[in-house]
Length: 205
Image 1 (cartoon, rainbow, N blue to C red):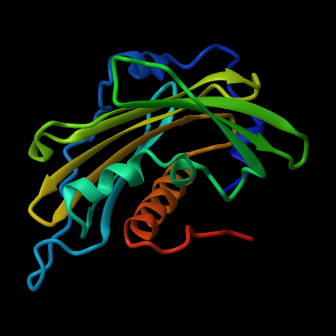
Image 2: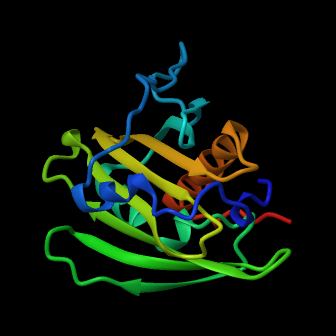
């Protein structure tokens, strides 16, 4: 991913930060999960991307071949959601939030070419019925003014022994575009698959 974290188009707080409070999934643009003739739940993804006036976006939808109970610890693992292409280090602070099942702030540090840091607040709500979909939402809530918007949502819906994983990502900086948003959701899905199957998270040079 290009060093999109270092240049911003605005110093205003992200308009999507309200999603952190409301746990509202972002628009998925009617993207369907992929299916194959010999496998209705292939462990691969479909992607859409585009641009709005205020941000670029990408949507990824794919299958994860684990049961619904096994996807919850993956969704709530802060390391899974970190952009390891650009982030040099990160710390996690748990939040005491009685309105959701899990909440925390991840402070991420980028060191190239200058050192900046920013906070991403994550909130997760586990569905009582896996078929209704567990929801996760995150947004930039503090830190460097070089970033206008980094935010997203996840809906993970259980079907027998497979999970329908849907992630929507919004990104707003001067030099980013849909390609950078696509790269992030692709990496995110790779991390989810690795964590779900007990494998090391991907790393990037």
